[in-house]
Length: 575
Image 1 (cartoon, rainbow, N blue to C red):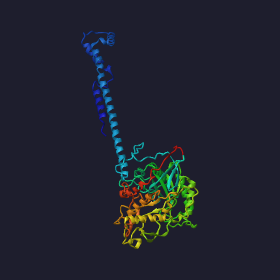
Image 2 (image 1 turned 90 degrees about the vertical axis):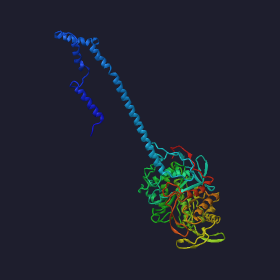
Image 3 (image 1 turned 180 degrees about the horizontal axis):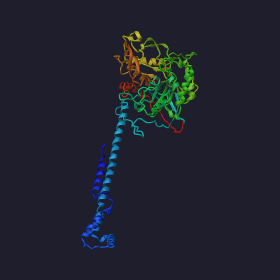
Image 4 (image 1 turned 90 degrees about the horizontal axis):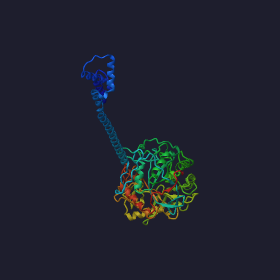
């Protein structure tokens, strides 16, 4: 290794000193011999005894100020001070320079770090939506400089309201008696009900994916105020740490993946940070969704289901999770019956499940779907036979509504879909039903006629419950494939648009579109073509909006009571 410049300069100085007089300099006394020799040459020579010589030496020392040679040496020492001063100034200048350039280097390093963090945040951001001119939410910068990726979501200081369903609306009721009506513009965000055990899209890599923070911002920017999150009973009961590498833990730092319910808790916190509520859906019994459509099934008893309800209420019923509205009792129980007293009686089951939920969390509401039955209906003077959409059949609730042990806790949450899910014959003007229920030679209807059929079938399945005086009625799922609609007259698109129109004109309490996920799969496009077609509110990169679809759902923005979920302030120490 070569020596440093400093080491080279040091060795050269030592060499110069050693060559001047044959040894190291020990101080000014080493020069006294030379000074004495020059003095004695200038005076006459006298032989002196040793005493006189010694006295002369003493005299020279005592009378040094009168000796010209000695005075010269003294003056030489004084002249060293400018050098010392110059050296000191040089040292100060060097130190100042070092400090200055260190500060500049740190600032430059900080700027580079901020640039990198901003690039990461911008990469995860979900682009635009509809209002391109809208002000972007200010970035959240954590104490370590990381942008839009908090270590944890700060407490909101909101109390968990007593959520109620009455007068056709959902109400947030504070402890002080304040009542605020809220209409729902919601999305479904699936994934936790699968073997992945987490909402899709959170892998966030260089090509695609995003974060909870970015999704909450996007939803808030587009006036969504609620998210329905499907769960799996098997995942709840196991409550294991997340196994699959489906979540980018670096860009989703606030997510706790130590257990299934811990992950759910932190997702709820992330949505609550933007005043977005959460509806928990008891969606499937097992990860493969092959244990049946009811609240019990292969390998799962009703007691297992109720234990799952207990675990969810224990995990989420507190002020910290103030934005949880309640539980959708069971998703699409199409194998169930209604009010007949059989084991499959879903009405009776919802009463038991709701009682268990309200015991664990009296502030929540019970969301109840319908079953699946065959009916007849007259449309435009012609009788049609049809089956309810899965989750949509609430015909019998008129005569036999669920009876809960706490008033104002029942919300009807039926489903209504489009030909992309199943080509209902009443949504077309003719054609032949062929293989796989495809409609061969389908004829599309003009929009006014199609609107009448959408409204009439909604009313027949569940709309009659939407009186404005009783429980709220909202759609737990609706819409579906949109931008990719292959019908020449866009019948699938129009069915979604018209469903939104009926929701707003007939004063429903809102609805949850299906779905945020671009992986959402549909079976028909168009009505004569079975297959597998995918589309969601977000595009496949999870970072850009499906603008035509988003614009259609924006029709819900006219709901009178649409607003961010209200926060009733409370002390952060209250649980």
